[in-house]
Image 1 (tube, rainbow, N blue to C red):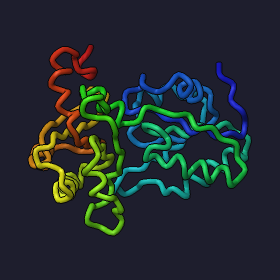
Image 2 (image 1 turned 180 degrees about the vertical axis):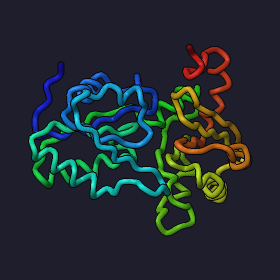
Image 3 (image 1 turned 60 degrees about the vertical axis):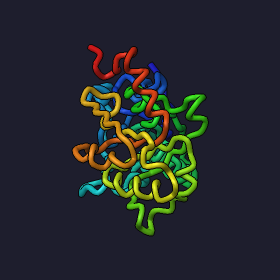
Length: 256
């Protein structure tokens, strides 16, 4: 059994969805922690790995949803629990530091003098696209990538993206973009990206209920009308590789 250091916070990435995509180290920490603070959307199979006598605190965040836990509340709980001498696992979807506020929480812990460790996880751009048969990079068409949040309305002051720069990238993956796919597509085409650029939306990546919608910038808003979060939106020629890959390799989520 893994022996954790009392008074330490472990910021653990749970991976993109499927319970068995957490790292070995992350699973060991989850099983050994005195307290586990959990995100929304975590697999029930993964939560079943928590020690029966461990304390559980649900501190999930869901975009635009009432009842999401304030970040300040989470920060205070991490510091308080560690100062009580407990080993604390902060279990986050994907990777803690890829749109997971892991960096913010680490800064709070460092300022409070609380020992912590960041345990990386498979982020959605890697996991969801791999399970959908879309390579994140490819030597012939994907030599560089950009990861961007799609949480804010592209036409709002909160969105500070350089759309001209994103339009020049071979591959762009937008997180939390379902609500704003139409506006994102418009901004990219207005910045010079061809309306025929292949794109895909992957909902519930790596899970049995995974949905993959493939189209072009010009059509994706209509094709993805029924898609709900969590989902990633990928833009670039790498999407075309799915046709070749899925002809040979069975989709992970359809395997028994």
